[in-house]
Length: 115
Length: 113
Image 1 (spheres, rainbow over the protein chains, first blue to last red):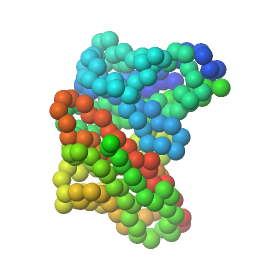
Image 2: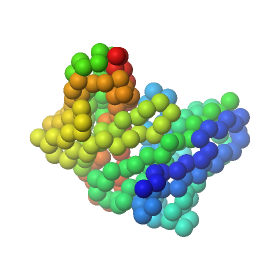
Image 3: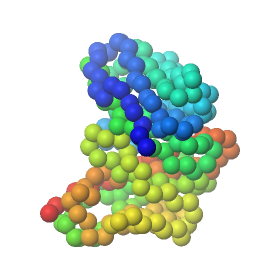
Image 4: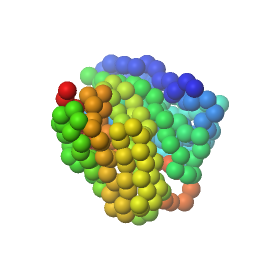
């Protein structure tokens, strides 16, 4: 079974530029998550999708971050405009279901550096 | 406010020297407690889920246990390949479909040959 795929793996941009990350979850997983992991910290949930609907985006900085999962499979996370403090690893995860303690499986992440 | 605290921040062991990592948590109700392993430059790798106090799970040299306030990850006779950051996360028991994991900052384990 293929794991969660993410691209690009690395991205360097200047502040105020925009950037987008792509994620393809494990086949058959209805729930998709985006987490932000700042160096030395644990991941923090940004947004959770159930199929193509948003379940939880309470910690997403909506003035600059947006995410979509239009067909209920792949997802894109966008930052516009980027700030220095957005430098982090952006992790995508998926799980079979939501609403229960189902295991979340993570992709390799995209390391973003904002200069 | 929900909190997850892991200790120690870093641990250095000799190969074969057993030890334990601690994860203490504060949540209004626990749906599940998760342990993950993270290698440098990679995403977290799922290890265990624990649901209720008294539960134990094992995988190779790792054993996870759970009480009402904390979880331990016991490492028996570790090998250098066990070197990684071990992350603990909790999922709160609440209504709705949110599956938010609240992570600790992790324990960086180094096992020397």
